[in-house]
Image (cartoon, rainbow, N blue to C red; front, top):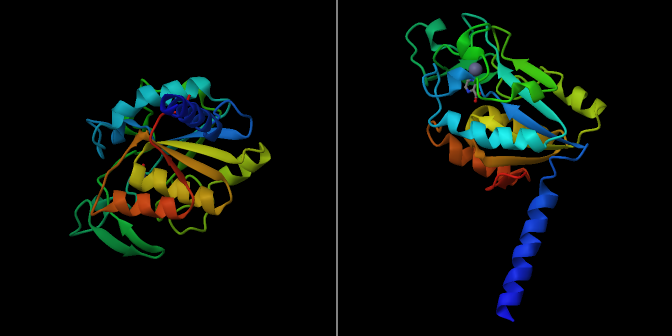
Length: 228
Ligand code: VGL
Ligand code: ZN
């Protein structure tokens, strides 16, 4: 009897998993955030084990009907670079005209190897690539809005036009570009899930825990498995 109940429970869980994340559905897109060389080991803003998510991401890409990617794409001398601010070091924060901005090592400079997608990523499946952070005076973590929370990237219009209302997010970094994108998507009305095993974090001053809480509070599902 107990065994029977346990089996039913497991079956229901499997069904729930498959229903939650139907990558093959026409209204669902996989959103691959910033899987670029500079965020992988050896890069200028390397995220620990950043390259270990590529296998799971490729597996999801293979089962997805719709795949969109973002690419952090900064001009030289971008205002988010610590090197542009005298007496400032990477990972310190400054006040910009749109609010507090963390300063980073120079990274993802347009056209450089660091800005290119990791060579193992199945980039041919990308139907649309959103480049962001190309305005010198403003950073852009989110795939939807730049860091002033006003300037749009155009992704919302693209997804709406394609009648996509459900998003699965993967990529780098969990607590910056993935979280900002997920939070904006939720506030724009999308059904959002973040596939945690297919993300890796920078985790600066408790940023990962804070963003996990913020995402949970916004009704974003945090999956602890890789859907297929
Ligand atoms: C990112 C910091 C600066 C990210 C991009 O992709 O999470 N983080 N630029
Ligand atoms: Zn950046």
